[in-house]
Amino acid sequence: MADLFADYPRAMQRSTAFDEMFSRDGGLRPDYSGVNDVLQSLNLSDVSARAEAMARTFLDRGVTFDFAGEERAWPLDIVPRIIPGAEWNRLSAGVAQRVTALEMFLNDVYDRMEIVRDGVVPRSLITTSAHFHREVHGLATPGGVRVHISGIDLVRDDAGVFRVLEDNVRVPSGVSYVLENRRAIAKGLPEAFSGASIRSVEEYPRRLLSALRRTAPEGVDDPTVVVLTPGVYNSAYFEHTLLAGMMGVELVEGRDLVCRGNRVYMRTTEGEQRVDVIYKRLDDEFLDPLQFRADSMLGAPGLINAAREGNVTIANAVGNGVADDKLVYTYVPDIIRYYLGEEPIIPNVDTYRLQEPAACEEVMDRLAELVLKPVDGSGGKGLVIGPAATGEELAALREKVLADPRGWIAQPVLQLSTVPTLDGETFGPRHVDLRPFAVNDGEEVWVLPGGLTRVALTEGSLVVNSSQGGGSKDTWVVDSAGSEQSPAAPTAVPWSTRRSARTAQRVWPSAFHSRGNSADQYDEQQQQQQQQSQGGPRC
Image (cartoon, rainbow, N blue to C red; front, side, top):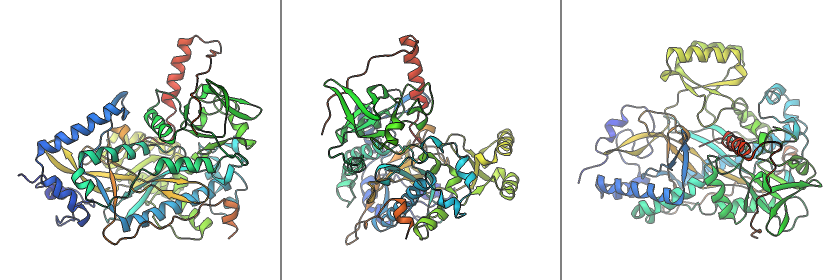
């Protein structure tokens, strides 16, 4: 039988990237031995048939994503990405450390700004961020938790070192694909799956629901939790429905909610029912037309006032986007040291702050060598990879950066690590990143084992986002015989403390209020807003 990896060592030589499955001399890494044995027992037609079966399963289950306006089956490659358990333990602790520090940072900047007073970060860094919302300054969150769910994007550089690429603490997306990938790969590669000690991902919905309930307003014994979606036209709508269903809570749109007396209620077939916790899956700007966009049809008027009175928990908290700002990202190592008194477990990628004249001048001289990113961009949009850009593109970029240096950062071109990926008649190395997801209930930051591995399906491409044509892999955290499970993650307690050392009734849609518009105009405007509101960084 033909060796499906016969040409792989030669393909590896075209890049300096660290390969997850093979060493530089072509040797198989021990944790991949089981997967390799199974794949080598198959021929190309067998592998292709299994891949096609997984794709059909995704379509049947509605596991799709939007690519250039077209709904496609979620692309899952048959070769998993494997992380040894001992290595994952360190990554998990590093992610929890980072989330804890960002939690404390956000509680601080929306309160006393002691980190500014102590000179760790400049005030202008915060106040000029597009996602710093003065409307919620001083708004205390139940249990002191602002970052209930987070996704911290990691990459492994060519030396094999994991680094943080960016932070997602607004509304990180993609965890539904982690759950569906695991379901699909267990059927697509059962021989390898059943023979490995792989840490489960099935605990996520229970952990998420528990965290949401534990951060309900004080005095609520049996909180009602809902998932707030922009609607069916949103690119992440599948994820909204899946998580609501797995948690056993209602999926609602803004028109299903009403605020009265600074409390929130949802309309049901049995009348109005009080809502205590809202897991929002839309951008802050669309949440409350009384505070943000007055033309928003996706949220509900009065939500911010209800939250300010302590009568409803909004997860993640409004205003978290300031911590997603890529310029703030460059200060996170100092933020960790300031609040926790610890060195960062996972380092950042080296980054230039273009608002600093010396850094900006150097970057302008090396524009064709670096990657430039808009500080408030997501989903790979706006990113310019210097070596792949044309002269015209670099000239246009130079003008944009010089006009708004605060709006950009620059980083070296990282050769992200690679994993074998099916490409027609063979397996080739394709670049990957990793988004671990963390859940914070106010007492513990729990990190989902593995997370979402995204893969660039085009040879040599460094853009892994599905919205830009990328795919995914199931991520296995594998424990070898005798290895220890992940230790307890650092405790996440309110900033002020650390710094000083039921199925609801079926929802019935509300009556349509056109505000002077026809029904067709309303539907068209709502659809446009659902598509505009990405609900945080896209996959």
